[in-house]
Length: 398
Ligand SMILES: Nc1ncnc2c1ncn2[C@@H]1O[C@H](COP(=O)(O)OP(=O)(O)OP(=O)(O)O)[C@@H](O)[C@H]1O
Image (cartoon, rainbow, N blue to C red):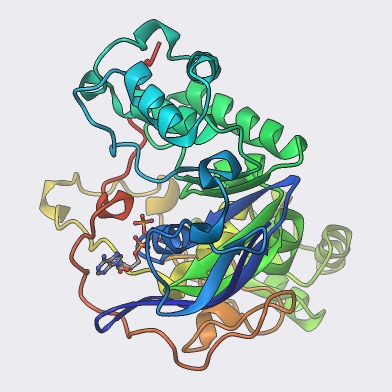
């Protein structure tokens, strides 16, 4: 098991990680999520003894990394796939790691096979693509057959077949009873891979719960309703009826209405009683991606501004799709078009309203005012976090 207790890291005036406490248990894949610069790599580096915490501690199986007897046989990690001597072949890179850790040379060929790099084992790694480098990094992590594995963005640069392979590998390692801690930006991927989630924002814990609990705690189920386009009267009548019955109604730009707080059959009955015809009545549930976006939208450091290319665009054609203007009916606010744009779930959203993120019931209490305020984009640090352009570049590593 990996455990962090009050883990804090400051780089001068910058607080990268503040008072993080969590446990990563064996037998499950635990996803580690957070926006760019939220402190994921720093946390992993502290767990692996590569950075010293300013306060608090991180342990693996009850020991700090540097006190672990024969650490490479107990813990494997992929932090920065580029941290390889480019002049060495994949095999000799792994052989040198194996020798240092007292691992038999035969294991090198085993892990080369597991990651699918047998064909290029004697090629210099400086010619490797991003995805091949990721595979080599994963091979290094598996070398000592460790019980505890940490992967920082393992699918970065892998093609769809490679992503599927990593997903299955993580699950298999966890099913063997190992502790698997994986950071990723790909929510959809985490939804398919992880059993448990730890979410951080600006270095602080925002959630520590199962994927299922995460979605139900943060997602908003809603119904989408559409009435005939023959004037605003029907929409206004329906809005008033549904609001009176206890529903919350928001207007979408294309004229549809989003309803929360009422079940679909009740919406249908109410529309019937009000003599309003429906062209659409459909259920919607927020995905993990949406739940995550909502949770972390207040803790994002890097945001794009709008590209000023309006003068390059063709003038709108009246009467078509979203370009058609629909005034929101009375009493129905418009669905916000920036960030998370579903209506919030009933009650206050603790993640976006409070100045410092609060923590859900399952997680330890958050500090009052811990992290440095939003600052200009920080200088890119060494290591994986320096890559702000992380993208999924397809490659064929075979
Ligand atoms: N060595 C360092 N010196 C100064 N600041 C640092 C250093 N390492 C990290 N930071 C800062 O600490 C914060 C957390 O960085 P970290 O790399 O841990 O985030 P991350 O969640 O891994 O980001 P990403 O998803 O972009 O990889 C960032 O603001 C980063 O600039």
